[in-house]
Image (cartoon, rainbow, N blue to C red; front, side, top):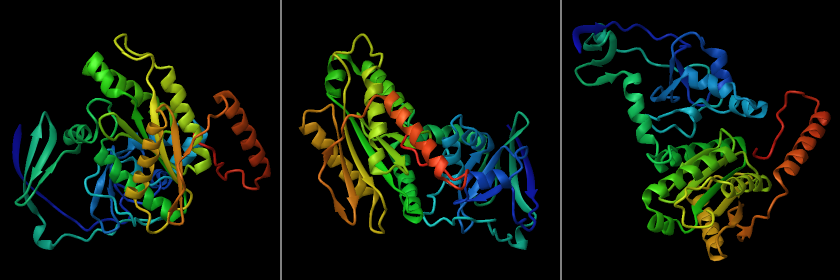
Amino acid sequence: MQVHQSSLSLSAPSAPCDHVVPAGMTLEQVVDRIQLDGPGHLLVAHEDGSLAGVISTEELLLRMSAADAVERLKWSRRPIESILSAVITPVAPAAIETPTYIDIPAPPESLSPWPCTAYFHRGRLQAVSTDDDVLLSWKSIEPFLLGAARDAVTGLVTRTSFLRSFECELARARRNQKPLSIVLIDIDFFKQINDCAGHATGDVVLNLIAGAICTSVRSYDLVARFAGDEFVALCCECIPDQVQLPISRIQQAISSLPLPSAFPLPQVTLSIGVASVSTVSEDLTCEALLEAADDCLYTAKRQGRNRAYCTLLEGGRRSEPRPIETLPSLTEAATQLHAAARNQRQRRSDPYEPVLFPIA
């Protein structure tokens, strides 16, 4: 590693700055604002100018070019902080809705030029050390941060990362008066799988189930490993009547898993608990939603496992857990959805107004 004594010359900030985007700005707004052939990474900042995280333009464009038109539309209207690969500081729930630029105060004149030490490795800047801090290359530390935010067995986000995102999504749903549903999923008799077939087989099963859940929800829904044999999915803008579809898809995907030869049971089954809310009240918390979903999960366990129960939270009250009925086949469901979408398009005066689909 090469070490160079250096200094930073700091000038007044530009406004707007193409390299910095504020939390709360939608992906569509960010794409319209930045130079796509410019820097490979963007800084995401809170309204007060503090750093929230870093996002690559490649990740941004990947979301905006989803194969499904409905998912592209949904991604385009989501806030930029929803795709942060790693969050440096918690994203402020009260992030502004349609910001134009971040007002970053100019540094004191006494810091210009700013004495520092620059570290290079193979011709690339790795770090800048000042008297009171060290600024590290994002490309150098991103793999470490991503690894810390992901479960080592399944590759899903960890419980801590999920809860942080859950807080942000709940606040966004409250501001925009959007519904959401939280789904808790527990593997039936998982201890028996580990005891009889070994933890290696158990890890294979965990990976298979994680993949089945991820492919059964939308790309902008968030799936995490919540505990040892428990998963959680946050279905954004999913009204209570629509939550049956992802549950049905998950159950069908699980029933057709290619299980390891050492698997000790005829098939793997899941117990599922769901809590849905149509309108997020001011006093509704993530803990209350998770507790409601957990109660439904244990109702499913008590009723014999391999089933799903749901509750609705409205006006500070929670409905009794009810079983989620089996849906028609996916082919029949898809036919019904497409027919409903065509009818809705024909009735709309604005051809670009989004269609509200159940989760697909």
